[in-house]
Image (cartoon, rainbow, N blue to C red):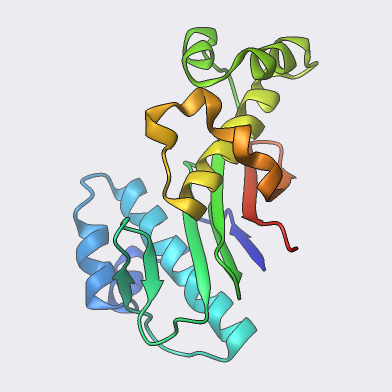
Length: 188
């Protein structure tokens, strides 16, 4: 299940800080900027709503972390999730199998950056696109969601990350100002 919320400014920050776990509150308060705090809290609150809707789990989830730093729901090893946020929105993916999600703002992109993080085929796809910024963002969110799923940075070779993509399934949602991609293992 995929949940997206782009109403980041529609809640009281103080009330939100009181409505999350101490673990998440401390994490949110590490951010200096209010916008970053809001995004952190909005992602957690969206996870809370998703857990209630999908599994009937009420309360304040506490995270544990695996050896690669991927967050897990303490007490619920059968529920997999991934969180992401960009300036405009937050996203949550919930599943009964490992999952990764990434949400990014679409807009101008840097050709120089694209050349560092995309392989030749991906660059051709971006350049040939009617909307190169959307093509770039789609490929980038694929790479980020794959990383969030596997925890494997492919030895730092970001340009070649999607070479293993046939083993995974990607689903992308496009919004006028952001794009969200979910990655999950292909079912045999």
